[in-house]
Length: 135
Image (cartoon, rainbow, N blue to C red; front, side, top):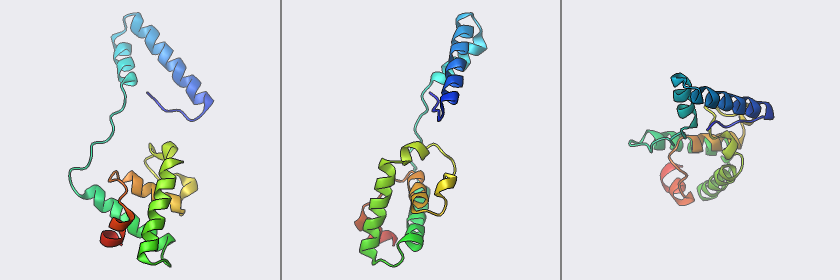
């Protein structure tokens, strides 16, 4: 299904779905195929089989520390990073996860750094792992 952000977009989406259903019921093969494709749930991205996603995540974590937690010792920085990423993940990430770029209103913020960590798809490591292996 399609995610919508405004009432007008929701109305357009519902109208399009109704039109496709009507055309498919009338025997239009192209409309039936389009309706089937539209109703198909998007598959989640496959887990990375190589280290590219982990390298991207680790680079984002290092940049996050350098730009937002540079004055803290490694243990405190790692803990603050995990707390920040988890807080963003529990809140705004639900709206931002489908974006291909950092939301413009977040650019330069700690939430933008958290978006990059989560967008890598490699998961959020523990604070201890960040401290020992990444920072």
